[in-house]
Length: 331
Length: 41
Image 1: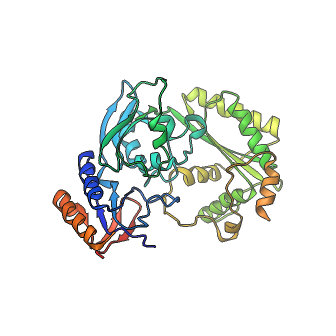
Image 2: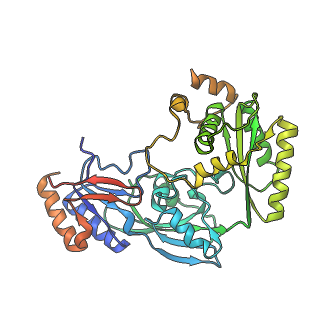
């Protein structure tokens, strides 16, 4: 199997993408869109050779509509660059994969990747209003709605596009709903006695109406990842109680007084109802935030320490008793 | 897919895109720093 393209092209707009696709269609040469190169599903691999469409040339912001709180972009713009542009308008795209430095809007739509703020804002589908795709027959079509949300009967082609991995066409433009930049943001960590407590605590907090924008429940192995990072960075062991077997990280965002209240109330809930302890060393908590939002994303570079690599597991599909799930995965 | 198909497609793509269509260089992909070594068959 050949996994390299024969040709690489860099279109700058939809019209060029249409012309490229016509050439591919006429000569029956496969066409594979390639964006930031951070996907792990293999959708960007030219396994039959052919033409690879590098989308970095599709990197312009076409419109920022402050009144309607939308942004229209070309699909190859990275999420980090887009948010830097939006910040000048005090706006923010809440869809934030960890790979935001390299991940593009088109790739987020194509892969339906995760967002660290998904608990509050959902994923890319929740902010995607419409998109322009160039189909395999070189037709440029816009799918989805305009800027207002509404419901209607009929097939939701935009939904079909999300996670299609480029099989339905090459995405060249997208319009997304954006939100105001929060006035304040705080991050906190809570040590728990078991993973179940972090999950139950998170459920409790999300149901409380507090201004939580992200939550990350971590088992003992993942906790060790953060203590390892802390040790590497500061040259000392973080002070954690012996009983700590899991950690819950939270971020809060909104108006300053709402955030202050939310942090205080969340701490009381975790301590009083789940026997948790707030992490005293804020550097450890900042380490979590850095790992999600500030570190350079290096594709396929293992960031876990050697001692933890065999124990890494995904928590997707977890149900029932989390402790049991972790034990099974650790065997 | 034959070499002839690729060659024809490439010639047309060069007409459209100029240097933004390539087959013979080590090409750095987007911001991820991934290199694709592309060669004419």
